[in-house]
Figure 1: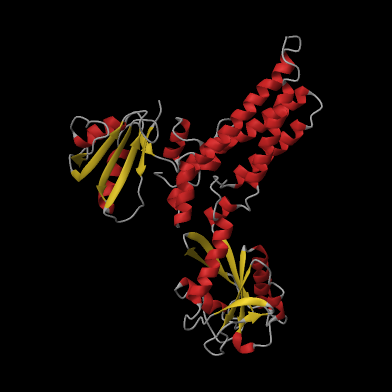
Figure 2: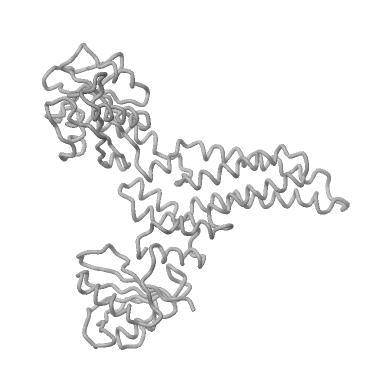
Length: 443
C-alpha cells in the first residue's frame, strides 16, 4: 500500500501561520483522528480544534482544507493543516501525525515527486517548483512561473510530436516497400527534420540565458590595490561586506555579494588588487584568483584611481574589453566630470560620497538586462536540458545524412528519446533522484 506522507510545507521557525501537508490514502483518516469529527467537504476551508488522538490534549485551533484525488497537487488525497506558527504547535501536530499507523515524514521533494509520478507535472514543471521557491528577483520569478505553467514542456513536446510524425513517414518506406505508397514518402521528413534542427540550434544559442537567470550574472570588480574596489562593493551592496583599509593588498580572496539589479540576479565579486610584485605568496594567490574570476565573469567592473591619473595600471588596462564597465573612482578628490580611461568611456564615481553610483548601477543594469532579458521564447534553465538538446540536434544531423532509411529512422528515434528525457516522457527513473534530491521537505 502507498504510504501516506506528511511534512511542514512552510519554512521552519516562528511565524504567524504554518502549513502541514498530508498526502496519501490515509490522509482523511488522520484528519478525522485529529478532529474527532466527520471530514469537511472537499476544497472548503473549515475551522476546527485539533487534539492529540491518544491523550485528547488540545493542540491548536486550525483552518483545514481537504482535497480528494486526483484534484490535488500530488494527485492523491491531500489534507492541509493551517496552524498558528509557533514551534510548539507545529511540533505537537507533527508528533501526533507520527504516531498514526501508515504515516511517515516525507522525504525531500517527495510531494513534488508524487505529483510527477501521478501525471500532475512533467519534469520541467517540477524543476520550476524549486526555482519558484528559490526565486529572489522578479525576473527569476517570471521565468519560474512560465516554466511551471508548462511553456518549456509544451515546446519540447511539440518538437517531439513533429519527430513522431516524421518517423511514421520513414518507417512506412521501410515496413511497406511493396505497397502502393507515393514515391519518396520518407523524403517528406527531411525538410521537417532540417527545420527542427535549426530551431534547436537557435534555442541553444542563447548564451546560457536561462541558466544565468537562475544562478545570477557574475560581475567581477578588478583593479589595482587601493583603487577603491572594496569601497565600491560596499557602496553597491549598501552594507559593509568587505574590509576597507588604506593598506594595499587588504583583499586577498574573492568576496561575493548577491544583488538585485533591475529585477535581475547578480553575483558581485570583489577581488585582490592587481600588481606585478606581490607582497607574499598569499597575495600572489589572491591575484591569481582575481584574474581567474575576471576571465570567467560575464561582466567586469574595472576600477581606476582618479588620483593616479594620468598613470594607468597596465594589468587592469589589459582586461578592458566590450564586457567591461570602466569606473574612475575617488572623483571627490580629483575632478573628472567627463572621464575617459585609455580611450574607454568611464563612469565617474566616489565610493566614499556615493556620487556617480546611480549612473554606475544604471550601466550595470543595462549590461545585465542585455544578457538575461529574453526574446519571448521560453529559455532552457538547466545543464541537463542543454545536454539532451545537443544530443537531439546531433541525432537529427546524422539522420539527414543517413544513407539508408533504417539508419535515418534510428537517429530520429534517438532524437525523440533525448527530447522525452527532458520532460520525463521516457527513461525517467535514472533522473528522478537528481531532479528531486535537493528539494526541501514539504515542496
